[in-house]
Image (cartoon, rainbow, N blue to C red; front, side, top):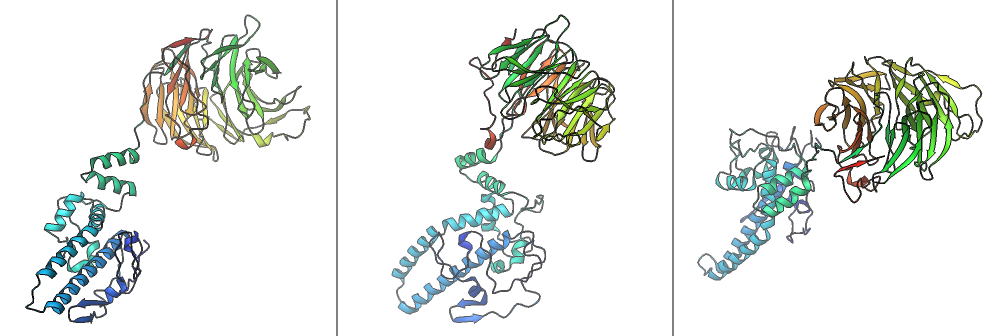
Length: 577
């Protein structure tokens, strides 16, 4: 408290709150009336017989305030003191002028009329002051304006027995102890509020309905509505029903890529145009993973993982393959991009994780991460591009540090012996395969992971200490996790029971909404570039677009905000062939 333990002497100048509370002698406020010096009004009292000094305060009547909860009461009290001094001074001047001109027996008719006119003018100029005093007093004591004004007029007494605006108005301590409400009403701390709540409560208690409705639109945040139905549905024939694969990806250019058996198609969410990218040769070949490049300026490139262990890089503007990277002995189940090191990371059924420098035309592998013993089906880089999280069919979650195997971006040398790195942490709390991984975008070092049908849990990790901070049993297989970019929420996709999407509040993990539109288990889920929508793919060959997280904040709506519909809008179902 800024006034805690401070001795307020009678000559002290009160703090400036609004302009009209200023105690500067001779200063005119925006109400057009001249102020009196508060220090002079506290030193002496003006009477009809002259000026009489008030004796210094005794120790029992001083203005020391040991535990006042806020400075708001002294502002209002100072204002009341100044108003009372001015009214008393004006009354004294009128009485002296009446005696000087007419004497005790003189005709005072003309003077009375003039005084009445002065009083009317004074009341007109003091209307705003009275409204201000009533609004401030009502806000301090948590009362409607009309109730506060009626109690001030009728009772005018405080809970301690003193007058509300009478003889005790000079005593700040008395005013601070005032409670105008009945004893049966529960007392609420008047200082536990924001400025917006004070304005809203004051307007709600007034008769100006239009003003209240106008301010309510500004102060009250509208409740977000989450629809139970998808905004768009796409039929994708030929989807491979495999939990360990990652078959869809949503680019920063608002284009969705989907793997349909041996083929890859892209769907433009703005124009709703569908284009064919590639179809693999061979009867047994199929696309096992897709991932759009996230490196700025290179978002047109699409990485395609295949069942034969190769990874292809395609330019989707000219539909041409620009790279083919090997190194794996099994299907490539997961892909991820690192914007910082310009790497593309691939994970395979051979349990290895390879780091590819796509700028190299020949051998592109720069690092080999070895720890998993079975297929690696989940990869996720953090926002800074330093730590990589991997999950596999061996029930492990590994945290890797990119600086251990980092190669200088200025060198073009291709290393003959690829360095092998070990994980910083190996997390063993899951009881089934871990595919769902996502880093929190607004809390550094927080990782969320989801387990398969034998685990059914979402776990949260502090990757700085390597400790699990929270675990939640969802009751079904967790296939994907997506954090909101602009709110403390998390969305999870599930299978093998309800086949639903669940929106959670973090960190309480309160269930906000369940979205049950899929008929088959959900295999993958991707976040839109503006952070508002998610796309979910199920085993029944259906891709659904949901409005889950709501629109981004107004200040960032211009960045990455896309129209996710063509002329036909969200309704209906399209077919990608």
